Image (cartoon, rainbow, N blue to C red):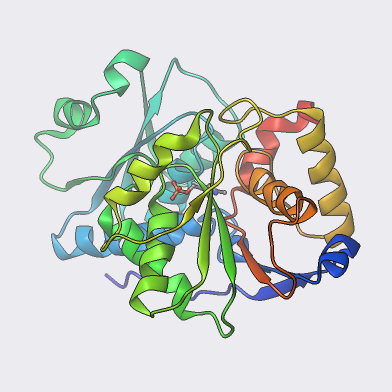
Length: 295
Ligand SMILES: *Cc1c(COP(=O)(O)O)cnc(C)c1O
């Protein structure tokens, strides 16, 4: 099986008078353009996971997520594209929405499960697919060392050295991978992680799990806007303005929070004059469709 996708992820500059005043530059790496559904970091995370599955002759991907999970949809689309069967074990009672519609359309079988059982994913895998020799377990969000390995490759694509790189964090796998990539190339770029959960300090343990060697980085808590998928008027207002100003679509769960953090930190003189900043657009735009009423 040929487990590869051509990566199209250009870097673009975002102009703003705030950045001019501060003497700093912001660029954005458009991982959202890699694929419309296997969005950005989700493809990077899946790449070595799927190579491992293929090496083990596994043909049936089994993974986990909430009803709006970008990872579930990315897995469904990648499975269809690359010739795997796929099953998604979904947290909570049976529902339908745009994400799950698209998962099914790509041939993913969905199994809904109560929140209590959902906690023990290996047990669920054994219960449903213990006898299926073709089945391959992929953790929620693609969290894994293989996931981090794929994300490290983002650093290889950069043609400029930045002073700062910013990325939104769910499982922390993408962050860990980029930090590993910076370390292995001996770059002094400061990595900045923006947890999207309330009390995001725990993200440090999650990121550290997948670091190949201890490395310094910044964790900016306080940009969760009340918790996972929570928003407020400030965040929604920022997203509307950003999209209208730049023509680059972002969403409130991950990329909106990460970019707002950069603008907020710039306004607070966090960056030295002359600093160059790279924001990673991790995609996730399908999530917007589940949040229309917030706009
Ligand atoms: C899944 C996702 C993330 C989080 O990536 P992790 O590797 O789990 O930290 C960030 N942004 C978007 C758009 C995502 O869909």
